Length: 115
Image 1 (tube, rainbow, N blue to C red):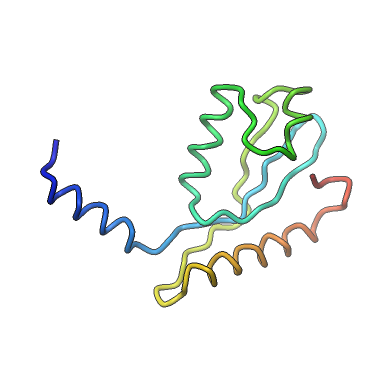
Image 2 (image 1 turned 30 degrees about the vertical axis):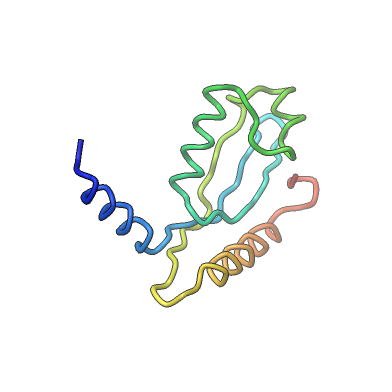
């Protein structure tokens, strides 16, 4: 295992790296419904989803009824648009941009298609 200094350096580099977020959709195949959200850390969201499917534990309350009815394997995580945080962009600006983009993506679907 690396030294304490090495771990600190890696942690510092991770925190300073621009965020790689995305607009994603959790899609339930049987119902055709989707939950479109902006997430500031795509890899973390993908890992969280994979874990929730593996353990059959729903991570989002809006999906719970369909998750119980159709099962975890009926859901997929679809990346609609990847977004990198600008070098000079504040985190709150990045989150706001993600939410705006998610709203634009939601407009492409009918109310019946969305959670």
